[in-house]
Image (cartoon, rainbow, N blue to C red; front, side):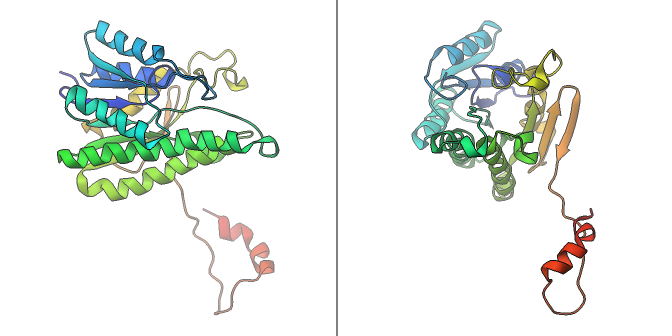
Length: 280
């Protein structure tokens, strides 16, 4: 018996890297999987059915059930078609893993409108659209559900040359927190992973030179956990994974400092009390 026997999981961007590892692991645990991937290049250009078809075929060869889907997550039509594929193929959706993504890295002063918008559309808008479509179906099924988003260390802490990507991933954190609150009454949990892994998206980054211990296989179990009943009613969390290290990201509020009297703070007073204001 697997963790997902009788359940249906939709995994976007599952034609390679982290998404592929997640799809294989979910299938291994008994899930019927919709393998979604537009099949474009790392920068979002082009499309191909081959990546999603290959992963779906790989799952079937291992004795699992899977179908391929090639719709883009970045349009409402695409997101709804992805969920519709799950329903038409397997009758329902129990888990959505929002993993699809692209990169168009450039420093702020060199970034074009197109670079900004396409990354926002795929990561942030795609997460919103797929989450909305999946949640509507889950609510109609009245059985609860699980949604696993993919944010990033870049989104939580920032990263040089990734204004667009960092903004999108930070936005996904906000989407995760708010939808976790809104969907809790429907027994739908919403959590996120923040992975550090060597994939097609990241393999040329200096931090991964000569590194073989940060592969997608380390990330997939985190998504599996958040998508399973092992997660229980935990919702609104960001689980970060870097090789064998697993940790959590949280937005924390400092204790702050109260000013005596009713007068507003002055800029000079803020400067004088800065260390006390920001102390955790």
